[in-house]
Every structure is written in C-alpha cells, then in structure tokens.
Length: 461
Image (cartoon, rainbow, N blue to C red; front, side):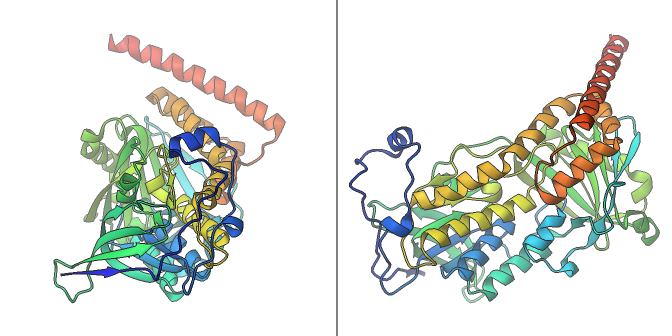
C-alpha cells in the first residue's frame, strides 16, 4: 500500500531567455559571477505557498524546518528515528544558547574548566580566562534534537517519522521534486507505508551518509569514525566532572584526533575518533578509558555509540533547488571535531535564503536563491575551518608535537583567544605584540618537540 501527496497545479521556474540552454557544468564556468533574484524573476505561486522538505531531524534539520515554517513555507520534516541518540560529545558554544533561544534546562552541564592531557599525561588546566557568565554547554543529542523538532512543529512544520528512500529529479524546469519515503505512523505496522511527496525544494540534513547528497551526486569526502560510551560512574566521582571536561591527546587514544570525557546529566561520555585508522577504533577507545580509569573507576557502560563524522565539505553542496546542510554538507571542524553549532547555523541560513528568495513562500525559488546561503556561509566561516585545519596538521602529527600543543595551551593568551573564538564563533582578533610572543613560543615548543622526536627515534633504532 502506498500513497502519493501531490502539489496543487505546479508553478515552475520561468526560463530566463538571457541564459542559453546548456549543462550546469558549463553554466558554472561561464557565469561564475551571475546571480539571480527569485523575488524579481521567479513566478508567483497560485493558491498555495512554497513547499519544502527537510530530510533529517538533527540540529540542522530542526533549525531549518523551524525557520521555514515561521517564514510562511509549507514545511515537511522527515526523520527516520525520532529517539535517535547520535554519538556526539555534545558540546555547544555559549553563543548558540542565545542565538537559538535554547532553554537552560536542556543543558546538562555548564563546563567552566577543562583539562588538556598530553601523551605523557601532563595535564594543563584551561578556563582561567572565562568570565563569570561564560561556559561551554553540554547536551545530550536526543534531548537537543527533540527540542528543536518540537519547536519546528509548534511553528507549523509537519514532522514525519519516516525513512527517506530516494528522490526523483525534475525532468523539466517547471516540475517538482518527488520524494519517496517509508512512513512509520504506528498504524501500518513495523513495515510502514510507502509515501511519495511533491515539493518545490529540498534541504538535505540527513548526516554524513546523506541520501540526499547521493541524489544530487554531491561527491564523497574523508570521514572520521567517532566511538563513544556513556558510562554511569559513582556519585562521588561524578562530583569531579560537575563542571569539568577532559581531552586526551596521544597516539594511544588517536593518531589524528583526541579522546574525551565529557560530563552529562548523570553520567559521562567517553569517546575518541579517527580518520586514518578506523579499524583500530575500539583499541583507541580502550586506551581512552585507561587514561581516565582512576576517575571513572566503578563505572558501568550504559550505552555504546558509533557514527561517521565528515572531515571537510563535500565537492558539491547545491544542485538546482536542493541544498545540503550540517554533516550532509561536511560542516565539521578539524582539530576540535565540532559540528552541532555549525549544523544548526547552516540549517537556519539555508532556510533564511529560501524564505527571502520566495518572499515568505509566495514565489518560486531557484538555484540562485539557495546559492546565497553558500556564499554567506563560506564568507563567514571559512577562516574558522582553515585555522583549525592548520592546527590539526601542525600539532596532531606526532606525540612530540602534541606535547608542544599541550604546553602551548598553558599560555593564558592562547586560552583567551581559543575560548573567545569557540564561544562566539569568530576568529578572535589578536594583540600584535602577544601574537609575536606566541609565534616565538610556538616555534620554541615545536623545536623542542622535534628534538624529542629525534631522540626517541634514536632510542628505537
């Protein structure tokens, strides 16, 4: 049994006579600086509002659906698992709490102290530059994601418990996208019901293994495997992690990432990740547990989670009226592995571009409208991604380099710059004199690291 949800008579895009009929590849080469405003060129919709489907109900999808629904768009949010607990450290920056109007009761812990622990177990305390009101929020993804989806629903989005299967692309410029998914509403049994839905535009927020991305041939990317165990530890040990998070670096916990112990409401999340040695992920997880064993002694594992995490943006993030956001687009930072804020922000920015281009759902949109989201995104966040990419390449390449990195983290100026950039999602402007001192100290740390590595290599010969 299947059902089909069609649009009212579809008002498509008007072909612009100034653009010759050609392939999209040719267009991208010949019209790099060409921009189209839907508000001026696209036709008004008759007897209905713009219809958009958001595939995926994480922070990206929930934020996108809420913004679309508020903006007058007929919105469908399709999520396969409404109780999903994605393996995720769960750290969110302070700016996200205000920007997305998050209630404080969904934040499990307010972390004001961190320990960065080197391969040789030298610990550096981080957080001394935080102001009294500043903190890093720790959330459980099942709580945050559900809250954002519920808020989207309250604003008019239709939340569908369904598994997205595939998408039929328009064969003509004035045709809709046809989505095929299995809906699980509890009435059709465990097998669900096959449903087809016509929409004007699609936002792919369906994670690292995005089926929407495959539908538009978005290309592949390198990805990390994140492995995490939620561990219920004794109350007296939980006191230690009340407002403290730990990060471990070293070849034992990951050759290219870090291990973590992050506090949650009544347990800790212990995890690690890697791009280069995925088959060894359980070995790295065991090493992370061993590094923290005295502090989590007596703990009981209550949940085991694993998930791919993208390492860089996909080659293509937009095609026609289909755009990718969040993990589906590849918006996870290197070095820190952060993705929650960037997922929510990209979902909102993409939805805002659709709302603006459609004049609150009254007009059709086209690729030029959605491209404005990409241009704004890249302009705003490219520097952040680049800086973290460089840091990972410099400091995660060997244990001596990681020792240098931890040594550098003891510097108060480094802590201030790091927290300002993280908490408020900007590349913080520095003090030229302090920057010069930092450069000298960094070079010194790297020189010592290289000398140590050479001595270690001699010992191993």
